[in-house]
Image (tube, rainbow, N blue to C red; front, side, top):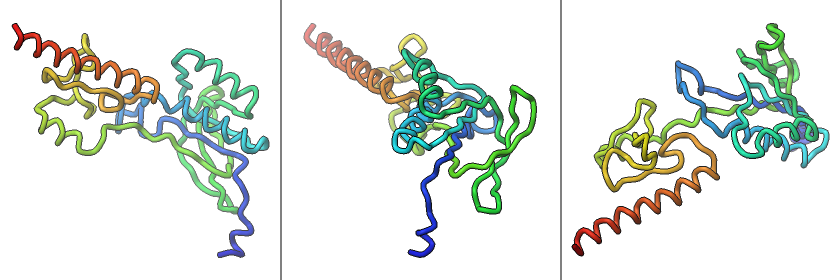
Amino acid sequence: MKEKAKGFKSAKKLAFIQCVGSRDLRFYPFCSGYCCMHAIKESIIAHEHDNDTHSVIFGMDIRAVGKGFEEYKIRGGNNSNIVYKRSRVAEITKDADECPVVIYEDTKEQKVKKEAFDLVIMATACGPVKGAGKIAETLDIRMDRFGFFKTDPANPLDTTRPGVFVCGCAHSPMDIPESVAQASSAAARAVQAVMKKTDQKAS
């Protein structure tokens, strides 16, 4: 094993494949929201650790939605050896050296291509947590068609049962800053509900 380990080397050429199982009617038709920016961040960090690292991000499109996100994406392409390929990946095989080979359709050129990498990272869909159905049954709240807890469109933290609130990925796929913001809002809604009951009892 030690002798085999001597032949190991750090991965220099990375492939990030987006929307694996998401935005797909066979699995989860919705966008997971945070995957594109996460892939860009990981690519930038990889380049910071080793300036010879080169990353290719394969995706139908890059959804950089948020303040400064588009600039961050562009900066990654300009300064961190990141290439964004609008594409649809069909298959991953391997070459004679056991390196992964990505076979994909380049949707800009409308051509099928293949490219070898040292490492392939897949962004899988953010689905509802296992056991969510049991929680919904216990709390007597409804779920939406995707398996997340159903909320009021006008009050997006309120479930179908008064006094029960959700935030973060219990609501839908979202990144950490948005989850934190929702958690604060859910706490505020809970305080409002408690204070309302207290006021009713006092009157």
